[in-house]
Length: 71
Image (tube, rainbow, N blue to C red; front, side, top):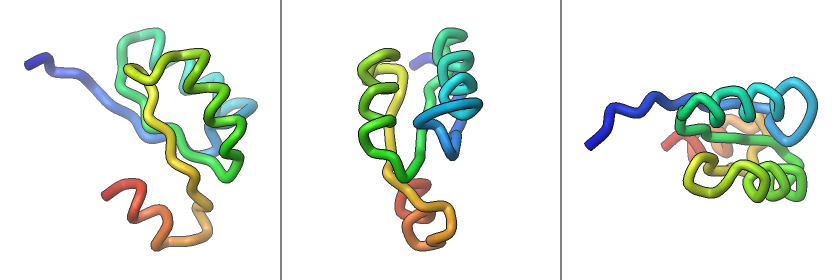
């Protein structure tokens, strides 16, 4: 088993969040990417690969939604 670092990024479907996800994925990190934009997340996952990025449609204003994603 490898010791792989992981990060959970909110707002990851575009802008700074997406760039942050790209940076960490390219450096070998396991990335949890969340956003309310399901299409944007799907695009990011296609770009970076499902083996690097797991996506979660989450509204960070909804605590239960966020807890499910992190659970």
